[in-house]
Length: 351
Image (tube, helix red, strand yellow):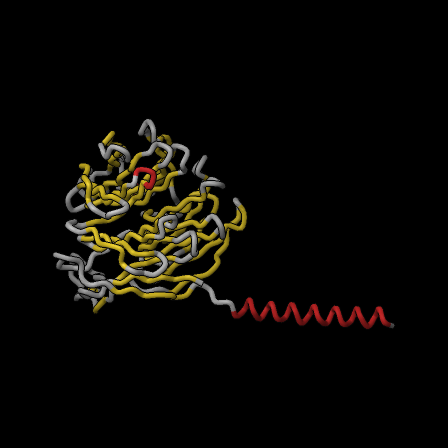
């Protein structure tokens, strides 16, 4: 009788414990808004323009593109550390910490602006091409890769000297790029709906892979350890998962309109995809061959660019407030809402 009684008590305690855990899990919030940081209009700018958000998790810095300036934020406090100004239309930032240098693409000037990571002072520049857009540091070759959209090319810069070492004809308009750290750079080619693999030492294209069922690919992220690429497109609106060795498409998922950024977090296996519609689609790498939808985070309209802090697991997004769309015209039958000047802000989402 004592054994039976203790068994019943143990079972009862286990049921209570499991029930409590279930309630705790149910009550545990997913990603939600933690902070909102407003910023004044960019100096000398007549419009609200913004693009990439780059997070340097090791240095605890966030680099935010804002038209004619780069805003440098403290990743923990949100405090503005400094502003890099005098730009015409900036896009992205790449950090080469081992050389103490940062690199900014200025598409309006067709240049790359080089700055000191400690002082944030501009120390030089390198000629790129018009519409210099996405930018990436490849640690294997110790080179900066600049994606020039309209010229369909990539300008390659030696990170140590700041000198241009070559130009690659990509055969289409490049968007996001990622590096595997072993000598290969992968680039989405927007107008060709394909992904190219580049040897970062020889600067030769090794492979071209179609991205169907996604089209007009922009955002790109990578799981380096498991050789997986995550490419997101706008038409059709899909995220596709590829094998980075073979280019084989392993999975695809629908997403909302206007995708412009993606990130992969090795510690959690989460894949984040942000879109203009004010959504961040979150997926999970259950195993190298299996992927699932985790959650969809509601952000704000226009918050299509994003950076991931791998230390805190927070994501940073930028956008502005919008007014009504202008009346449709023959040239623009579906006009977008109008950005309101002086309303630029950064959103921080986390758990």
